[in-house]
Length: 265
Image (tube, rainbow, N blue to C red; front, side, top):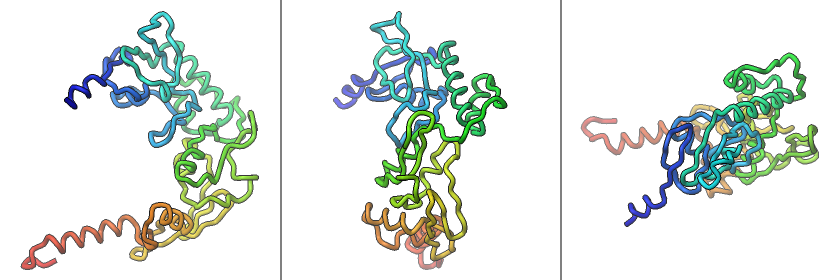
């Protein structure tokens, strides 16, 4: 009965001529990636809500009810439906994608990922004529990941070309716990984060690392440890040992339990 129900829920779509099964609620981008079809993205992350901010994942979608009206849609947001036909590299799609890349390059001429994507789409951009002011493309991956963690230390402020990511009043971010998620998820590496053996500096604040009590490797900042232990009900010493040492200790304990006494440990 469950198998029959599952089959009833399965739908089929066509992506670049390939017929593939999908489930209601999936997006075109999710299905395309699953079958190995590349669609460029900058603002997408599987762990975060889709917002279609970068517009690079545009594709052509043709619904069975309106085959004469192909639509240009953001694949990260567009839900699949039975019989949907998707084309990822039509002339119209590629032209719009190149236009978007040109606008991104104008804002962020030094962003290596923009250059790489431009080369993949035909290498049509002349970077010498662009004079951008930073590498932020306003994908909001940093603010969305910060909010998903339950911290919300940074947000988008300003309007138009002056819009930027910043802490409240552009001062040292009081709510920041120094986890570094925003800097790691940024596709253009524009968030400045500096680590030393014992400290991390980000968003105008300096944080002290907790050092592994076994090997001395930095684990997380003290502020993040306090935040995570409270939120997830962890023991206060949870981050006092790095992952590598935890694995080594677990392996040694496992061996001591499983190894027969006559072989020793």
